[in-house]
Amino acid sequence: MASRKGNNNDGVLSKVRNTINSSSIVQKGKQAASSASTVFWKVCKSTGKAAWYTGTTTLVLIVPLIIVMDREQQLIEVEQHNAALLGAPTGLSPSM
Amino acid sequence: MAAQTDPLFGTIPKETEIKKEERTNYMDLPTPIPFEEAHREAMMSLKPEHFEGMRFDFTKGLNPRFSLSHSLFMGPMEFPSQSSEVIKIPTSNYEFGANFIDPKFMLFGRMLTDGRLSARLKADLSDNLTLKGNAQLTNEPQMSHGMANFDYKGTDWRGQFQFGNGPLFGLSYIQSVTRHLSLGSEVFWAEQQRKSGLGVAARYNTDKMVATGQMASTGMVALSYVQKISEKVTLASDFMYNLMSRDVTASVGYDYILRQCRLRGKLDSNGCASAFLEERLNMGLNFILSAEVDHKKKDYKFGFGMTVGE
Image (cartoon, rainbow over all chains, first blue to last red):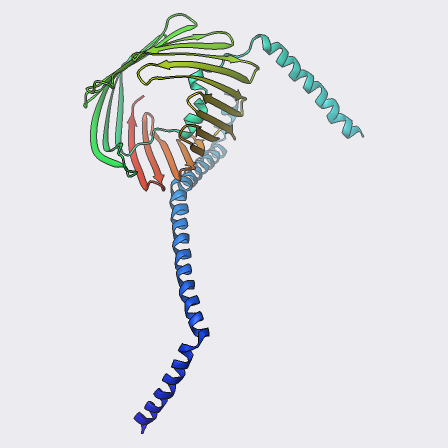
């Protein structure tokens, strides 16, 4: 019973599928989907490339700059802190 | 109304002051910098000595005037090839050098393990006349060359006469026109390369910025602009155009001189990003990092080095 029902269902389903597949809207949809996927893939690839270029460029140009400036800032802070604690060198350095 | 007149009164004396300054200064304009160094600031900021591999430099002073230097380099060397891809061959060399430095007389000699020998000389013949010479000897017959320059420093101008083997002759002259502007021109003639040409250059500099332009009859046009943002930061840009080969290159860069390090970065229109870090670890001990990423040629160069002494 179940198998016959299933066959029956299959038959109906396949018929429906065939009619759907052969309709022009579906064909167009498929083409659109495939071209969309290729476009999507190309966009992905080019954005990936752009990300790679900008990423490596930033790594070379900007990252060292940030590190160096951060350290310089820390050095200045430490110096100011020391100057504030000791007091005496600040009095001396401007007169120098 | 008072607020409006005040700045007016404030500005009028200033203008006259500037005019006065200019008038007095036409008589004694500053000496311009040599013609060949017109792009000095831009070169300093944009063209550090990038390298790939490892280098170690050691300088030892024997007495205040005499010092010896040793330097070691290991890494790939680029060789020119027909295809666009770069051919790199791993090499290593050692360079021995001797320097004699006196305020009026300098002598540098360098010798490499691959047989290259070079010498440089700088001597002040009088207060205004300087002789500079450099010579190079190699195993390859065509690569050896020698050159001598006579530089004359006037009150507001400089002239240079240059001759070398080949034969090669050059003459250049640069003159301060106003306090900030100097104009110069050069003539050169090289028989070996069958080239001769004429060049003109202009340079405008104030305390905060330097702008230069140079043109030569070989078709080369070079413009550069350097802006000093603060004590530590300098921004530079340059533009090179070759009329013959239609090559255009523009680049922008920064130059940070901090207490413990100097960092120079550059980005150019050929898709090449580069950075050069010189870090002072200790007195007389410097650490160098060099990075150059060329996206177009897919050529990536990274190097590190150490400089001891000086």
